[in-house]
Amino acid sequence: MAKTTISIIKCDVGSIAGHHVVPQELLDACRDVLARGRDEGTIVDFYVTNCGDDIELIMSHRRGEEDSKVHELAWEAFKAAAERAKEMHLYGAGQDILKTAFAGTVKGMGPGVAELEFEERPSEPIVVLMADKSSVGAWNMPLFRIFADPFCTAGLVIDPAMHDGFRFRVMDVIEGTYVELNCPEEMYDLLALIGDPHRYVIERVFRKRDGLPCAVTSTTVLSLIAGKYVGKDDPVALIRIQHGLPALGEVLEAFSFPHLVPGWMRGSHYGPLMPVSQRDAKCTRFDGPPRVVALGFQVRDATLIGPVDLFDDPAFDYARAIANQIANYMRAHGPFEPHRLPPDQLEYTTLPQLLERLKPRFKKLGK
Image 1 (tube, rainbow, N blue to C red):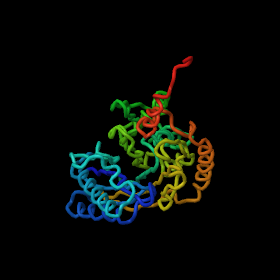
Image 2 (image 1 turned 180 degrees about the vertical axis):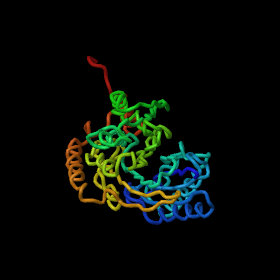
Image 3 (image 1 turned 120 degrees about the vertical axis):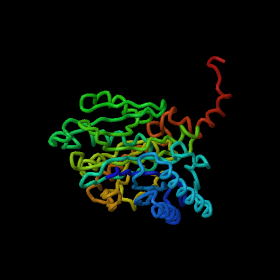
Image 4 (image 1 turned 90 degrees about the horizontal axis):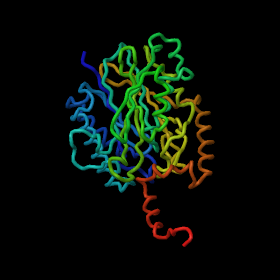
């Protein structure tokens, strides 16, 4: 049987009342385009949703990763939604569409992409992660905990299929290079890199003993493409689970601690990543705090069964309460670090323009 590919492509093309939530009209515009693509045989199945102000296209097909027809279909869907956003005078209409002509792939054109090709197992459960008001490095800590931390994933200790560990592909998003590190033996080297989520990002995870592809993330950094601030990257990720891979509960356990991620208001502040149900994926307080949604699917012959809303569970109420406490603490710092990002992370925002205006007023000491 031909391999299955799951493509998750996201884009911010406009929202209601600021950077808040995608209206139904934009989602419907995307569904219409993807339905035509399904009928024409480009994709097998799809699901359209949103996380905050980002449209999320989840597509299944047999065409492999980075297929030009699949990417063009997503591009046409986002263009249709952007046109509707402009008609509705929505805020940020077309924000993430950085180029007007499709060039064979949406990579480098604004949208974020996470794609994984694999041979379906007898039962193929997956988890789709979607974040808002955050950056591509947001998945570093959860992925480490899921695939390398036995305090989170018991299977690393007691499941023979996982006991040998996993291999992590880490990207240097500044240099455009990557390195692959094996865990547990190279765990400290891995942590030395991914502890800096601004530059080093986990892009893929493989099972070490047989190279089975386990997880993939989006690594598009909008500011590096545009050369200026155009919004946060709001990453997505796909994780295969069960049957010799981390169990569903082990994946979700990684989000029981709302760790700090860069993003939040104007993409310029650290805030806690709050696990929420899809209906609560709408950022309000200080345009946040940052949110993460997890949807569970079964994949069968390249069709999608589901989703189930995995954080729609009172078991995560405590994590949400902790996230609100962290939000209170961080907000109390106002414009001061460590709530505000350090200068090297603000170089693509509007802050440098203000600093440039002040330069002529600086005087040498003693004069």
